[in-house]
Image: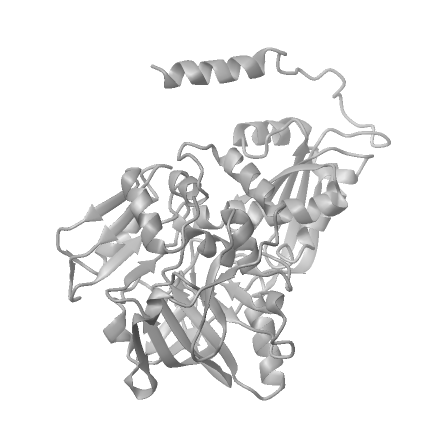
Length: 474
């Protein structure tokens, strides 16, 4: 089932027992974030959380942890809620092959119901804002999809980027945004500032679940997120035209904010408790001037708690990081079998691969680090054989324990790029990267004593499914 907006997905979550409505009155801080934080500690079946009685807000509707479990992630893709993680990644990869599917333009966007513009814009009157972590420097819009265009090629549909970036509210009509240098919006801004121009943007809040997945997904610069959303949904993604910028925005958004990133203006943004499980400090970041806000009547404000894993962000950017790396690697190395990049948006990656010759696995690891996403994220790569499931950590640890000779199988490459938020970077944005080759050596790399491996019995696969059925039927 393809969901056209957040509300229809919340209805499904409620029917499936994956939406918990909390009607008792609670304070916004620290309880909203603390509840979402706790959802990440109660297991992989945690529900989304819906709050409609929050002290200090009049008639606010706040939802958190929408993507915060593998059950919810499966339902977002229209899969049975019990679909295993590996199965979800495999289905994600299968649907990727349908890309591109052109979006469907609609005119009756529900976010057109209310509009404020110019001097009347006041986000504090429209949104129930609250801090997510005690040390945050302010209120954040951390689950919004930001739409921008290449100012030198504005009519190229594929170069219209839809991405998730951290955004701090610094005034009633002012925001600060952190564009990581390797992300598309940073390239758009650099081009605009080179021309001495502001960069128009649209910020959409409360989007359908697949659109949010795609907005957090590493894709090619000229690949359209809307066309990818169509492939993952199995139906064209509904879009509408934003009235001020003319940009294409999701049809079903709760709120659409339009304005510009002001050329060459910077203001302190942060600190913020990041997906790395650490605060990032305050830095001078680009400033957004809001010129128009359109929103649904009684909008639902969707936010995302992130901190020490696992939290909602880890589910949100799990499968959608694995699959682009898998597809990019397999295009050059068809021997690659699977990629597990679930850990901190791919800062650590596990790859299973066949090998053509000795040293081949290390080459695959180096290529992972030089993919568009790998340049800024992939810092540690573990290579395992094709018969090791990279999503099965006991198998991965077995391979590392039995097949790694540190003198020969660990490669450290100094002074490579990494996102500025990486806590271990030194200096900021620079790190050493590591490859651990936990594959079985093949000729001409004739090392070790690997000639007589123990394999699963031929009947094991059949019995695995049989036992699962018997357990489920109890």
